[in-house]
Length: 571
Image 1: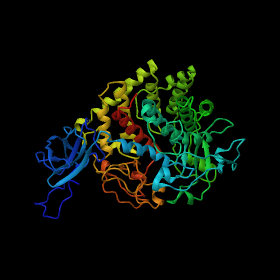
Image 2: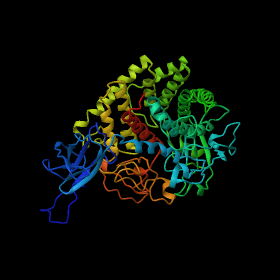
Image 3: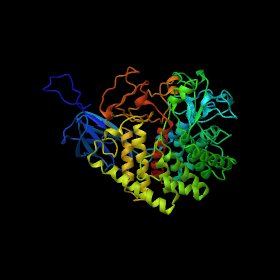
Image 4: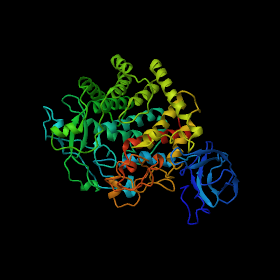
């Protein structure tokens, strides 16, 4: 850190030099920026190749001051380096290695997607596909109880249903409709933009030999679970499948609590309708899942109707626990409004069916401005979908909203601490910030680059990637298994209990969180309270170091789209 001092008198002390850069790789023909702390503006900086030859002596292009710590940083541009290879950048005895690679994001983008196979439930994770991360079947969910809050005439409390497959949601072992739907929805939108790229991927999963793209096979593994979460009697959708309390940090096979489907909700049901309609459209005519498109279409129609007729049935865990037992204390995914969920659902229903009633609902509920989508605010998924659809009136309006948003993003870069649209506002840091405030805006920039002004916005999306991968205040590459300094102790029960030192590769952690909600309960000592430094690589730090499928979905969306662009496999 800049203001850590060596053991000399205060008059002689010198600041420690820190070099912050993308630890995974820069593209030959794109911007390459390195950020220094603890140097002076005119220090001699050298870049050498693998043979030790000096190939560049870059200069500082500007100074930046942290808005919180007031640390002085210097921005250095090494974009002249276009020859692939390994390089070392050095100043005042400090040095860091970096790579220039035309396939810079290939491995990390694929790992971020392979993560979803490793998060599968209800099947053994096999060595052939998972290597050292193989494990026996956990949570088959063939004996799931109807919680009293979810009871209906055909499914009274305590009755048993089967609800297998799907992905574990996060660091815990439960499955949540809201978050699963959001995760699939975001990734499928990016798939729609880059179909040829995703069809070219071999992820080495059990379905790799069939005729369907591995990406779609992985989505289907979770979609098949989602179908089981709809009550066949009325079309409403259960909010989640969960144990009453979070399991300890034990292996999936060691979990003993009963599992329940809990209370239907309007938000889960609209999200379900949206993603089923989306998947039905994109998988129509699929040879491996012949019946799915019809089943999903019918399920989506019934879900949409139920949600329209139950507009105030929100999931409120506290009041539910006052009325029903056992009390449920796992992730709430609570929400107090459903306009955004209905907008997304109506959008996807119209794209599937061309029924004018859905178009009218979407027009009535369209947002006034673009906001990046998160699980609790999904209107942005509808915006992206209208842009994909090409519906002239709606597309034009959505593109203007997107342009306004992206122009505000890129205006921040010239004064930013790390040469990126992300990272200089306090409100950008918090729970899941690296996904919701860094990755998803990057996806928005890529939409703008394709549909508004080609080549204007792509570089800014890459700057957010650089931030994630090490050019930031902590010096972490925030994706496990990549870079010289990446998280080793995520809040993730499988990685904690599997006896393997390294966590799953390709997992995005939540990131710096100045709220530090876990500080007292976990007896944790954060290294800093500054918003962009408030990160702790310790297992109990669920506030900064947990993983989640929606966060990884945003990482997949950003990295795979960029990899597709740079692979020149966009059609």
